[in-house]
Amino acid sequence: MITTDVQSARSFLSDEEFDQAFSEAQKAYQKVKDKSGAGSEWLGWRRILREPNDAELEKISSHAERIRKDADIFIVCGIGGSYTGAMAIIKALNPYFKNNGPEILYAGHHMSGKYLKQLMEYIQEPKENGEAKSVYLNAISKSGSTLETALAFRAIRTWMHNTYEDAADRIIATTGKEGGVMNKIVDEEGYQKYIIPDDIGGRFSVLTPVGLLPIAVAGIDIQTLYYGAVSEFEDREKDQETVLEYAALRYSFLKKGHVMDVITSFEPELLGFTAWIQQLLGESEGKEGKGMFPAMAGYSTDLHSIGQIIQEGQRNLMETVLVVQKPISDFSVESTDGEDVDQLEYLAGKSFHEINKSALDGTVQAHTEGGVPVLKINIEKLNAQQLGKLIYFYELFTAVYVYMLGVNPFNQPGVEGYKKAMYRLLGKK
Ligand code: PA5
Image (cartoon, rainbow, N blue to C red):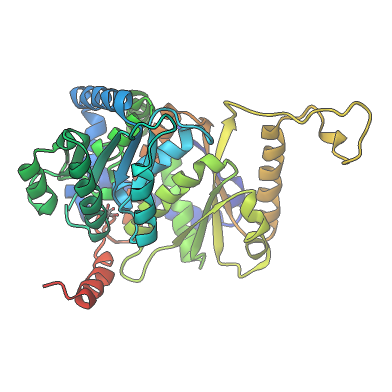
């Protein structure tokens, strides 16, 4: 099970404040459990873990294996919940400097013409041996009509049809069961299609084909990831204490004027995961004038930029740190045998994990003393199983905590605001 360390955070609350919030969290959890809260038709992210669809997992894995054998490049074309989860897991588990299989590129996640132009040029460049690159495209959009994704999809699929005779086999659409422009295109062109279940919203969809196909193409074992989430689900059905405690703490801090949560990790691979949490929380809680702003940061890098304001700026923050307890791969400081020109000999023999841990512990201590409550969320190791657990932990936490605020965690009416204004300016009929 995912564990937490709330020692710093608890020291900012009285027992009475905490107990009251905890009993609110229990009521909110009950709404998730008995499907009595707003938006309960969107609880499918629990259903899929209660009744895992092994046949679909197998289908995705073997499809991904076929793609991995042939592809040089796999483009994930989606935005928001339709790409953040896949990006988070791939960034967390794939090597920093070389590809474990096809190169994974992202498109449709913003509207930079420069980016799309360069991406199109890059995929057309021949390989070192002079051969053309083998490109696959996975367009992901539940609504099938999101502009950022649709524009990139149009450009890339047009190029693919002009380039490959078997373009229809290289283009995969992941979309809602029916309706939407993407479904119309899929029907006309005969692309392969994966369905996003009706009862799962974008930001809760990483364990559906939305996230699973790109993650599998990246060479990550999706069965292990998925069953990590299943085991966290099963454990949490029996014991929700940690999740409720976390929800009670965050809710209490919001009530006391902590309006921003800096979500961070000392492991750079987890920056994508903090972006996934940011999206999950931000779109779920920020409604009706409520919610805490989920900021993201990467430590210790950002201790040298926003560290100052966290330590001594306005006291309206809290901090959440994702902690990896055991390293899978590490590096140690070498001894220079007596010489100590750079004055680092006191660290000789220590691993970077140990040094990084001192940076973490020192930061928690300093920020706590500076008036910032810090919550630590622990995973044992950075692997697929633990990340699967962390996904469900955060999904459940988000639902419980957002119900405490009295809003529907599963809709995002505010996102329509910019779309309406943009379409008006673009003259869309
Ligand atoms: O969480 C959500 O629902 C959103 O972030 C969507 O995933 C995002 O807006 C993309 O929508 P769609 O998949 O319909 O293109």
